[in-house]
Length: 112
Length: 115
Image (cartoon, rainbow over all chains, first blue to last red; front, side):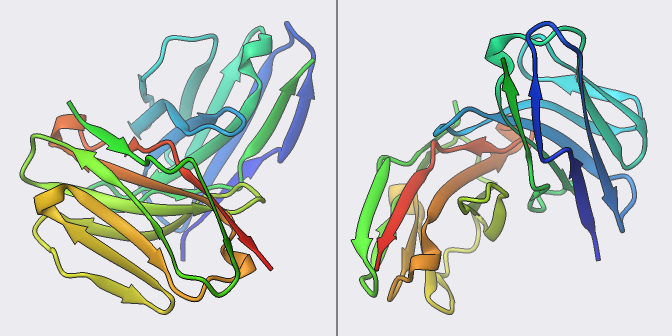
């Protein structure tokens, strides 16, 4: 069966510090991968998605970047965090063909 | 343009009551997919159902049922005999060629089940 791992679960970072959130999927190959952000009490905002290694599409211009160095690894990064980067970050995968997305447990990021 | 509207921001009911969460969608495509997800307080999103636009049969899974009506562009979700564990935020989502098959999410409905 397929599983998705996302870490860390919580993170507190000072403004201006770098960020690296990692997501890995097991049990499948060549998944589509997604990064979402959810502000407190709000809906989901798609940040990045990837259909293959090295292929990243950005949905919203921002202070963040994403990379996919391996087939089942998706990394969300920032060089200098802003207060507005606080939120709940979710990684997801799917098989394409309108199959459902499956989500990791999320990372709660607080910027101080 | 594609859009998903969940007009109910928050619903509160007493345990064992039935509750319906509304979802209205907009799309120009004739082929599209609708989804419901549950987000419990712990935060992870749990997939509940996927329905394609050619299948208007209603679906029942235990206490959960879904009513898909193309005539009103709605895909409503009913929980029968609600339980405290049903408390969560529920999201409806849409995908189609018009969105490059990316999910278009509703804003979510927070469901509170009181004991």
